Picture: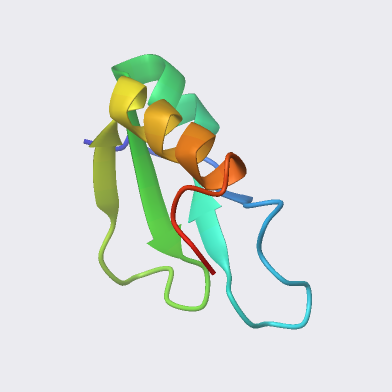
Length: 69
């Protein structure tokens, strides 16, 4: 569950020209240890939620180039 009035932050990996726009809610992640992710172009659309530890491992893998281009 995402706490009410949680602010969403655009990923630093998202493009600024309206392309790949991913957002997450840091306050919600801190409060629940679940990282919510959504498409910023569809804020009323679905939200994917990941356990914080799993999401941290995924981000580390992306940074390490483990997933190809």
